[in-house]
Image (tube, rainbow, N blue to C red; front, top):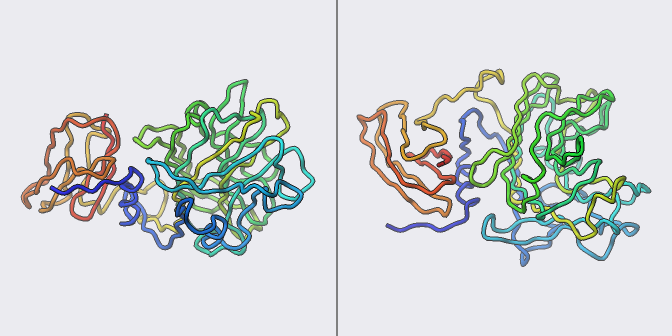
Length: 369
């Protein structure tokens, strides 16, 4: 039997390519995909701007009064995710664009006015943002802010980011956190957190944000490691994700950090890896976020996560090829399912990790303990 060897991330791209989400609760109407083509590919800034529009990069080297001469977003590659973008920040040299602010520094990319509409969240629309993220091992944060992702309104009555994924020190405890701000000069609210050691271990994480931009919107953010372990998650219904008077909501990725407590930061260069940006306009299959249920599925799995035994439940009696694929893209189980079956049990000895279960044209993720 021929096997296909590929990276863990490449296997997961099979799910995205088929526009199939594990919960089957939305369909993809449009998308923008930004992928690195490696150190030997086309110019990094040209590649990013080809997807997000001219002027979407706010890197220190783009400003003569900041830190010219050293490119702050480059491309690299590893065995886990393949090609990726590497964002760099320097404690003593970098600042915030060409402003006179010296208490912070920024190296970010974003969608904005010049970006395609597929990358902007207009009122009433829902979007999915998905990427992979890795900080340099031991990455240090200050007592103030160290932001890596934001959802921010363009225009409107409040300039505070609506949602932020960040690192900060709270009650002397460094934390990886999700912050929400409802606007009107209200203070930030931490809505999820994890120990900072989960973020600066030097390992890749899978990041997913689902958002409906409305006065009573919907937000779900999930952060996992590459083997399915949950690091941080939040889900909010009837949450205000719209700023009065704004024209759209835009995503931002990169490093934006305070220097107000610079003694907490390391003098060495810090880096953050970002891989495989996916921005999608989505349409829920059912109205009402509370009712987003699994429906129209050809099969489901139990228990989740699994160990030693896995049950595959068919919605209707049907025939097809059932296949389980490991993180290297290798088929480790194949079975032809008879059309009379509505449930089949699989007994396996698998290494702990993340797998794909494929039945005909539907694919689901499975975590094995």
